[in-house]
Image (cartoon, rainbow, N blue to C red):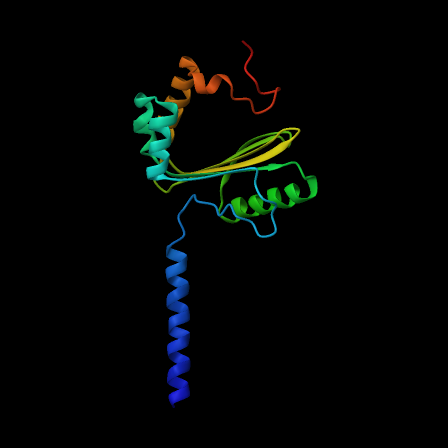
Length: 180
């Protein structure tokens, strides 16, 4: 009887621990650390408070601060080109996106992919996942939070119209570069 009670307690604890682990999963947040992956050349992990500090102190555009409130976290990993390993990593992320029912928005050859995870609330995104590859690197970006799709569109429009200094030097690939 004692063994049976201990077995029931262990089983109940296992189920309880599993349900707690599942509730800790944040919709839109993708685990960016992959076992056996090479060391990233760039690794950025910003939670909401660090993201706000980043926006306020590095970009110094207070008029965009309200947009930072929508974002709970930003994760970026960039790797030097190692075709076999990067293909495995890309496939790993694609499986996650498919399993969690992310909407694949667009793809430019195999150089740029954008996927969105829509919330149950209309007009809200829980996640944005972007992967892009140039001749030297592959980069994976995960942004998650409660992102208002309309505000996001307004932000992109404002950024494109104002051409802030920090965007002038951003180049994904020469094929995507804006002509001046």
